Amino acid sequence: MSSINHFELNLYNTAISDKGIMALIKAISGYFSLSKLCIHLTSCLCLTDRSAEMLIELLKNNTNIKDFVLFLSGSGISRHGVSKLLEARLPHHNDFKIEL
Picture (spheres, helix red, strand yellow):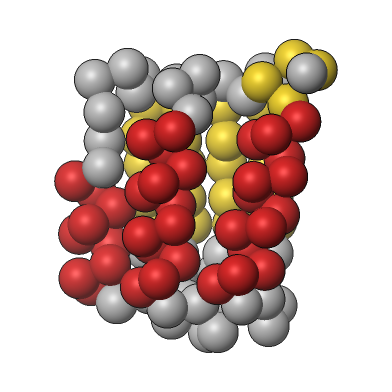
């Protein structure tokens, strides 16, 4: 497993699905030991609350991620999904931001 500090995934205005985003993130987190993960999902209207649930699982299963930033402006994730994501902050997270 390679080690990098920061990975930024920019998917502005794409038609990526819940399964697509999670396949990308799982592949990245399975290959790299990440300490900071930044995901831009701005205007990704195809995403649903299922994406939020899968991101929560990713955070729970990857304790090496200390800093997590997620941009969701204009995505298909509802307020309920965003509130669940905010509840997913774990004690080992130094920086945990969700920007709407």
